[in-house]
Image (cartoon, rainbow, N blue to C red):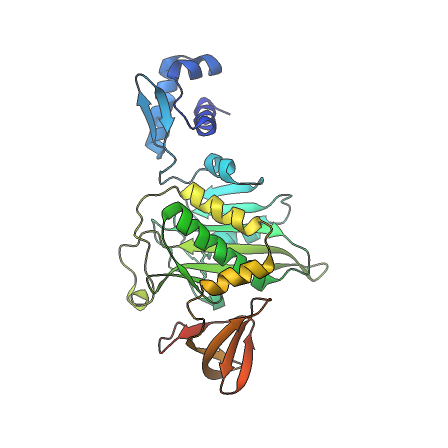
Length: 312
Ligand code: BTN
């Protein structure tokens, strides 16, 4: 570790003000060297404040995504990559997941080829938050439940960390003030030899601040209007939520309470046919039950749209 990395780690671990002299003694360098390293860290985007009487203090609310901060907030070890340039954090993880012994996390400030569900692209400009996590699972894993857990983890983090109240549109779109603000893409990876699912990649994109949406998204997407927040805490809280053990019944209960389509008329396609019906329930597997005429249809995945709006 070089001096800058040592200072960064020390300030993050301490979270209170630390005197320049204390760090100089600890790392056996001059106070001038400490000052220089801190200037350099600040020029990279960290926000380290120096006060004559109390020393140096690092602000957690900054726009930089930092591996060290993430590690501090995460409840378990992750292989972490923070990427300046990437096509898609999920595509990136697909390439590196094999051979990793611990879960992986890839984060980016923007994506050049963000992927959405059903082969669509995901608008990923600067000032958003784009990250994916990958972890090993046993073959019996239920992808719908993981997706539902991810949705709830996002809702909790947005409420607790950035104080925004959002809702979910089944199965995994996060809505803020009636428009989509976050998308979640869950993908299962197959082990070629056994032919069984052996890992899951969950990619999450949050529109923190968007200057202008492309015309085709203007009516259906929005941003949280956040220019600065503790991105590391936001990412880590979501990841911790996804990785935590939770009670499936409780999860579904909470999901239903926050799901904007419950007891509303929805449109959907199934096997090439179009249907309209009343969304009446979400079962213990996370499937959506829709009453179409007198029949109850069970949707395991796919897209539904509310009222007359088409989200497809
Ligand atoms: C959707 O709403 O259709 C899902 C969008 C998922 C977007 C995220 S951004 C991070 C990760 N990388 C991608 O390419 N996609 C996911």
